[in-house]
Amino acid sequence: MQVSNTVKGFANRWVSATSFGLIPLFSIPVMATGMHLSSMMVYRFAFGCLGILAVLLWKRVDMKLSLIEFGEICLLALFYDTEALLMILGYNYIPSGVATTLVFSYPIWTELLMLIFFHERFSLGTLGAMTLAIMGVACMSNMGGDGSIHPLGVVIEMAAGFSYALYMVSMPHMRVRHMGSLKLTFYVFLIGALFFVILSFFFFDGVRAVDSTDVFVNLALLGIVSTALSNVMLIPAIKQIGATLTAILGAFEPLTAMIISILVFGDTLTPGICIGFVFIISAVLLLIFLKMKRHEA
Image 1 (cartoon, rainbow, N blue to C red):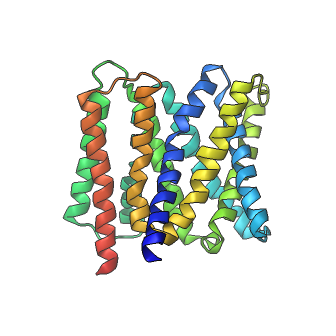
Image 2 (cartoon, rainbow, N blue to C red):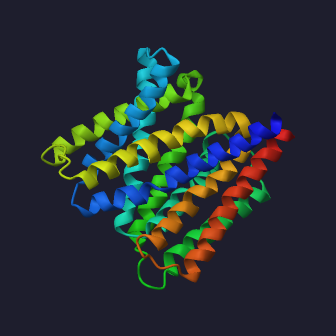
Image 3 (cartoon, rainbow, N blue to C red):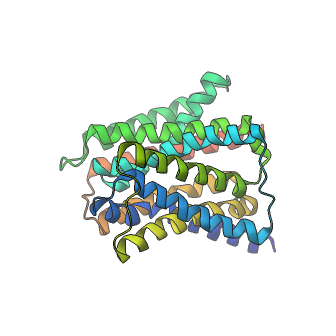
């Protein structure tokens, strides 16, 4: 039974990471039609909400919120939605595979925030991981070869990673940490959808209507597969194989995005991008290993 659970855990995490890595496959064609980003985010989170709501109703989860929980979720939604917005915005400036890899460096930001605000112990291993990450970003920024790596895109994606790190660091210190993950994620998505509706009316002429079947299918897949499914499958994976292995297997996210970027969108895979990819993934895995050893001590 233990082996069976392990296999299921690996499968669930693979599905979760791969489905998240498919974000460029569904979002870039929608952006190419001229739909502004805020409208696309409305549909993404709306479809994501519907997918997760179906699971919550099936499990008969109590959906009540206290006022304090609502306030905390609004703050978390701000961090999460900023990350989601910036990640896709960066696709306008750099290849989607590179963009996803740079966002995946969020554990480095998380470690920095923990060191600064929570006085977590600093070690040579942590310094080594951060050095690897910096080298990886430098390789991806300055060695694109074909001119496809725009510095602004790098800044945007690093900011996306930082925003997600704020989400990861803040949540364990809030009351909502005791809330079920699916319920919390549903409300983060719901508030995100409402936020982008307001943004669409404030800066544009409202939420753009879906005017073709292709756009509708891509938006539905973006919300259901890359948003709802990726989160739903993550939870059982953590229970079946543990948080550490789940985090390590998250490397499938940038790997999937990199493959999509090259095979579907024809982006160039250069030596600088390859080296940067290896450096960043190595830095993240090293940090995960250090945290695992720290908890065992």
